[in-house]
Image 1 (cartoon, helix red, strand yellow):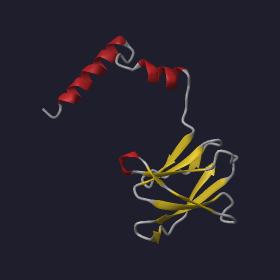
Image 2 (cartoon, rainbow, N blue to C red):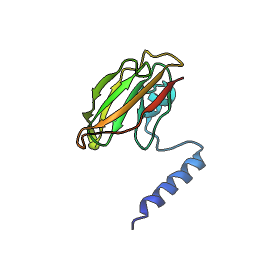
Image 3 (tube, rainbow, N blue to C red):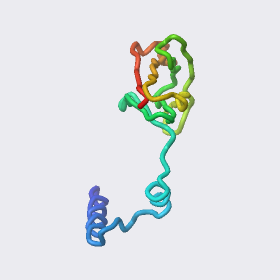
Length: 130
């Protein structure tokens, strides 16, 4: 019976189409995100989802599968900062980069030092503020 949940989802979809609205939508998330318009202050960057632009005022959150040092700059390497990731749930390691005050047209550049492997990633990642 591995596909029982698929049949249940199909029945829920048919009911929603018949009623012309999603019938099993929880009211709290709907109010928060659809009515009140709450949005996250963070934009995530991952190795398998390399965000290339973020909106001005957002905070860049680097999410990695292993502990790492994030070596980054807001001025194209004229100055740089180092920040260690911290352990997060589900085996992730995250760090929030202080990007909320950057303006449209600014750019963030960073590279990674993998702590367990004791090696640099060997590439720069660039993210533009739009």
